[in-house]
Image (tube, rainbow, N blue to C red; front, side, top):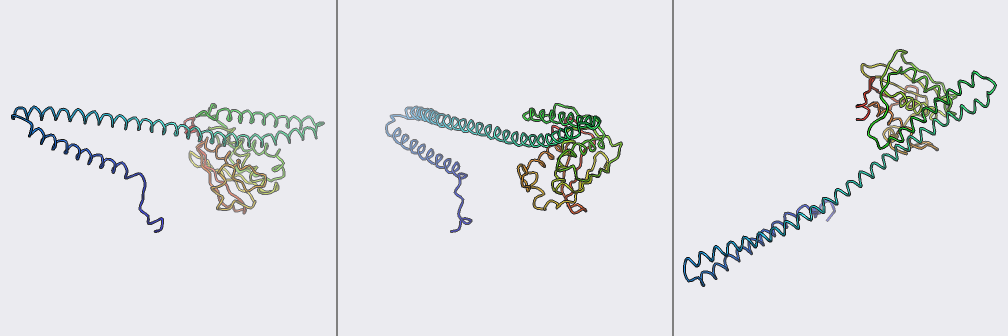
Length: 324
């Protein structure tokens, strides 16, 4: 007999079978007691009054005895259920703690990934300052990059400290999206993999949003870095921003090799990567930053032959939306 044709032998029918057997045993034993005791009393009773008294006593005794037995059985059954409930609760709490620890670990890893990216920009800024130390104005600009990187690192540290908190500490603020994009591109140019890429932006100058600009900067930085690495540091990257009612559609395209269709879902899984020295956390960080804004992301093939990342972000984000 094949396994697919075998009759199920699980624990589903055991409670019913046990209940039926217990009921049959009770009926047989009660019936036997009534028949035997009535026969004996019928023979030994001297009068009808004596027989009636004996029957009443016998009935009361039967009720008391069966009541005590049923109470003991019920007590044991409830104790067993209580023990099982405590065990289930303990295992459930252990599972929740394990899941929280796993999520916290993934989030901490993604933040560490972002910190390393920011540090790469800071390191390049320091190198350029050392290289062009004599040019005061240029050095001042590089120091501004370092200060900006420091602010981003502080923000990432706060995210790491708030892993186990259910909401963000900061409040949504107003900002111009084109300024956030320009700042992200300018800072990303300090990274070795990005500095020789050509990056274009098509975005209105008066497009105001309410949200968390630091998260968007980090998200754009990761998107630029991914596109740059996909094009071996010499590619073309294009940002196109289109207002769409209460939302903003953002399209990021590059002329790299693209993302195979079978990997469109996998790239959001922690530690999945096709890069030789990749961590598999860049897209996870992008998704986390996007989730804060209750946004959506999809992946397509671009007209340039590479990957096209489509983002949809609400123009106005409330703290309730960020924590949902």
